[in-house]
Length: 571
Image (tube, rainbow, N blue to C red):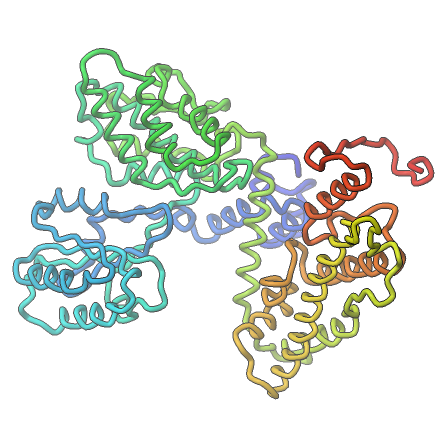
């Protein structure tokens, strides 16, 4: 059962769920314990069974829907995220409505306020559309924008065709009344391959799909480009397995590539595949890529979709054959393309990216942890009826226990002679001693921060001092068994452990360095206990270099993998 691709869709072994009348939520608990990487997909399945498929599918809101929901006095606000830009989509819709020639567009910034006000005044009189981009970049003008939008409701002199379009990244200084009164749409890259391709087809019309002298080829290559765009965006979810550096590819890359491809196809003669590969791979998308290996990977992926093979009816994009061009790509309408994409799996397998199935495990496990973290963070603090402890009592108990267990600060007062040995010839401390000094200094910084905040939070719970935002965050973290950000932000080391395991691990790390200081350099080193393991490696090379008079640049590590873990044999 655990080895199945989709165990959450099949009954438990021996019909355990039916025999014991288990609710599907209890099956989710079992999956959390046994297969955490399948939990996100299982939650989607639970939502589908409980509420219906509409609640797990990317909503297809169009510009037409937004326009119909708005009036002359309600601004339309696009809440932006990195990698998404609605401008091109809006301009296409303006062209459909015949408003593109008179539409006023201005990107806000210092000194652009008077120009924006003038555009809006003209739009109100003449009934034109006005787009104010990047409102978040002009913080001081936001009160003026609020007054302007209030004036739209109160004024009777506004033309009925006037529309005010706004774009902004999330910002706490954006006027709340404008958000409350306006029509809002979050513009963000959709999650999942299917949703990504579907979004690319949403603003398209049948005319755009067939507008070429080489129509059959144009249709297939368009589909290939949209598929390629979705693939390189979705690869980011795999972290370093997808791209060495996380690139923010966006809709403008796809639009530029589509336009260039269309222009190339309109030239007489054969399709210039090599030219397309170079322009799209090296310039349009490649212009964002800074890593050499990523560039090679990008071009290798692109060659799967910008290729003469895509014109063959039986060409597929993945080994399973699930992903390919529509069979009727030469004649299908845009709606036909959308229907075909809608049949793709809701959650794609790594094989479509050319990866092993295990590539998904890390990503889906992290997504599940993130989701559960959010669920925990929004739990109510109030204790229910009965004799249960209140959250304040629970956290106070944890803090008292942590205070008792907190190690003493590290010090070199009782240091072993070899730990910080000074070399007579040079008068310098040994390299490992310098490394140890830096490490125990960092741990002391962490211990001081922990000691201080544990005491402050106890006082804040009693009401002796004010509960600040940082202490409130620490309170929630302690309650949810998470490591408080106030510890890890400046003084902490990277760790994925929950609070209980993290605290025990921190004590072991401190004791490892205490033993090193007081008993001298150990026989073997716990390398993952270091804040900066690279510094330790460099210290070892430097020490060997000084002792044997060999340039440090000429040294490197050589590793022998032992086939035993018996200490006696290793000696």
